[in-house]
Length: 499
Image 1 (cartoon, rainbow, N blue to C red):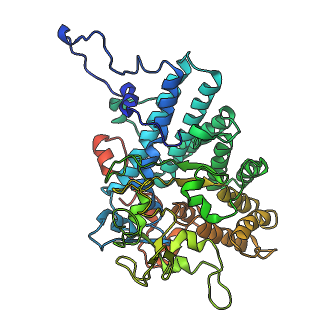
Image 2: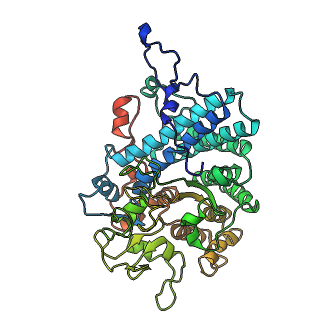
């Protein structure tokens, strides 16, 4: 599982497709070795392969849509790259000129629904398998509930009302389904995560199963869902239960969260599993593409030269705390981003690079080109990408608990960063501002900022923040457009206002 099993994923689509049967007898093959939904879901191995395939849409989602939307659209980063004509679709996101035809919006939508469909198939087929141990069956069903909840959580926050289905859907049904109210979608997410908490083990996985989610991961994600909904009581309750479990802890070194030698470590509740498999120039293979896309442009520090996208903004850099001499004292800066003068072996970051006039680049997903076992080139890097870390659970507990009770949780994060405790006795508003700033720096370039901007209790927070840094965001951008290609296939899909 550590690097999702390679498998004929097409088998998972079988139950969702209607295939015309040919009557000619010469096509009736005997023996018939084709994989179908009638002959596949029979054994424990089949169940494990099916749930493994439910994780794989995460790879394409985080390679080819998540950072472009959830980072580049924010005040944390700008597009970078080789100019306005290099990655036009990302330029549209950065400048809020996107339309319903934007391919990144389409990829985000499709990858999440691919995950939903696969989770539904697991939940439909696995209960009937008899050749499986009760513990593995429970685990497979729990993982499917978790993943379906996660995929819907990604969808509802970006699009609002979305099509909701909890059983495998045929193509004919997919072309007719309407959008469901987001409140109903959230009900399903919460139910899925509670079921996952019930079914999944509470121990961390090791060996070949490292990377599988457990009950605590589901509880941690549930705390994030409740925080998004403004239910601070349940957000705090679930986050604190994870904290008090003592199953997770902060890495002593912040940079270990982004290290090949520490994947699925003590701080990781959930991360995207990647490996190098030789595939090239492909967002949807098993290799991670962020290393190439975010590496300093044309410096050959990473394989495929480096493209220099997702460039940190000066306004973001200003959030790092400094000493009286103006020197950054936050030890998260170095592992998070390149600044002029930073070194790796003989490489020295320049004061200005193509696409990065201030010499800034993201470093969190860096694997050097010299490590040919981990970065094979052609967008095929082995480094995992974190989705939910223990540090975020601490910050959820802090925000949901409020000033006083929440101080201990934010201070744990700050102390690891080498920073002093926050001022005690802050007002509710000042404490929220402090937590937001801490989240911004701690979780920088981990595709969290956009969701923080749009969930803020001030409904104008996102627009005001974006306009303050020169981005042309409008109220309509609180939701992204439903992809036009999906609406062309399904006339029952309505569009969000303003698109």
